[in-house]
Structures are given as structure tokens and as C-alpha cells.
Length: 146
Image (cartoon, rainbow, N blue to C red; front, top):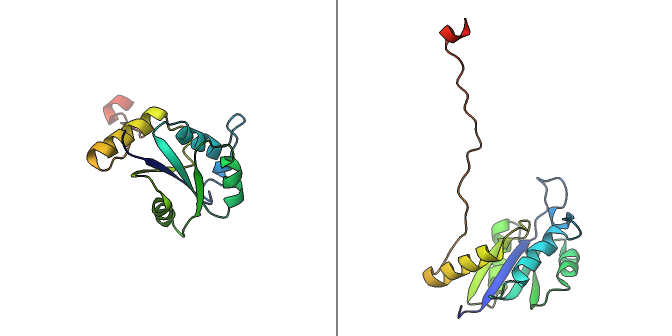
């Protein structure tokens, strides 16, 4: 890859739907946020991380303290979209990857593939196929009930 890459990790949410702070949840000795930071820090193409924080700025800074790449922390906005925009505007890379920091299991392969597609096409969004989550049940016909 010829371009510089900024990874914007949006970590400004309040986790109200979850009922507890997702970002500080322990995943076997590592928080969700730290795992997300590590995933992008270990990706060779990523040249800087921009962490978008809310009221949790001190926690975000603490979680990024051991990151080997340049890190900047910016303030989030009133909405998720505003927070992502604030991160993108602060980024210095020629390519910008935006990631929800509450999704800690992104692989280096997904990051690398998305960046390659974005470089080739101008934009990219990784996705997984939708899985059926509804089971359909057909009740027995009246003749089968006797």
C-alpha cells in the first residue's frame, strides 16, 4: 500500500442499550477498547490512530497508553455520525478507516482487505452475509391432527 492510513476508532458512546460500559468489559485480561486499539495498532498499513472519546476521555487515554503508533484523542459529537465526522476531520492519513471500538474482534485480514479495496476503488465497507435468524414453523393441517 502506497498511502498513509488513519484508523478512527469511535469510542464516544454511552452503552445505554447494553446497560453497562461495553468498552471497559474485560475480555480475559484486556478491555474491549484495548483489544480494538491493538487490532489496528498491529496492522502494518495503519500509520496513526484517532480515538474519538466522550465523557470517557481519561479511560480512552489510559487504554491507548501502550500503543506503539501515534495516537490522538478527539472529542465526540452529539450523535454517532458527528463523532465519526470529528475523527475523520482530525485524521492525517490519505485513507481513513472508521471502526466502532465496541467491535473488538476485527481481524488484520479484514482491515487489510478493506484498505486495499478502498485504495483501489476510493471507498470500501467490509460486511458479512446476513444469516437467517427466524425459524418458520408450519402448523399441521387439520387432517394431520386427528
